[in-house]
Length: 232
Image 1 (cartoon, rainbow, N blue to C red):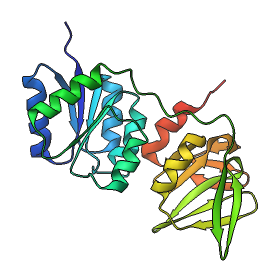
Image 2 (cartoon, rainbow, N blue to C red; image 1 turned 90 degrees about the horizontal axis):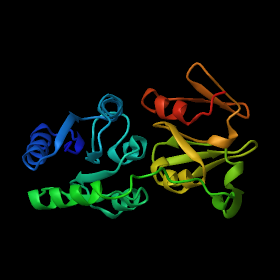
Image 3 (cartoon, rainbow, N blue to C red; image 1 turned 180 degrees about the vertical axis):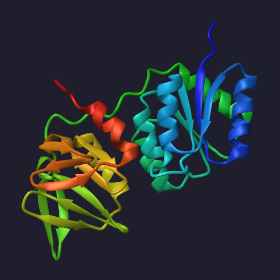
Image 4 (cartoon, rainbow, N blue to C red; image 1 turned 45 degrees about the horizontal axis):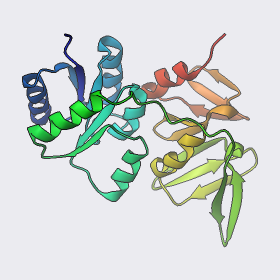
């Protein structure tokens, strides 16, 4: 019988080795140990593992929570982070498990076994109809339909939302806005940009164009973005 194959994404070498040793001892095949998202995506292409063990805080442009839905396989978070903000971001993705460091062998293997027997994770589907959202501007609270939003841009601890005619500043980070917009058909294309996929007009030389706006596609997001396109 073929051993279940597992990808480990962890930026602390000693912990990564400990995870790999524990998995190997219990009959699993560790296909690769990487410490950032770009290498994890490459390992997915090279090895096609059955499961990923992800730390939240990793090297590179995206963290483990941003990386997880790009993998297309079940994943278990193994991390030191268990604050409410991190848990709120993680649970939207429906991970197959969530282990808090320091981990025990029993907890790791139990989560892996459960994850491997779950139905593979699917990307969160976009809702069939646009949703009415509300944004603050001065003393007003204004409504904006989700399908009118072209893209969102990170700005320090804030974010901008762009429609064809308006620009709104939001007192939340892009990551927190992403949790609400991804189920509505939005896609992260850069560490600083989240776009409305249905509003794309054209793509050229590493940029996507939406109603006259030009948004850069980050290198670590390019493959997922191109895979999303239905090319004729």
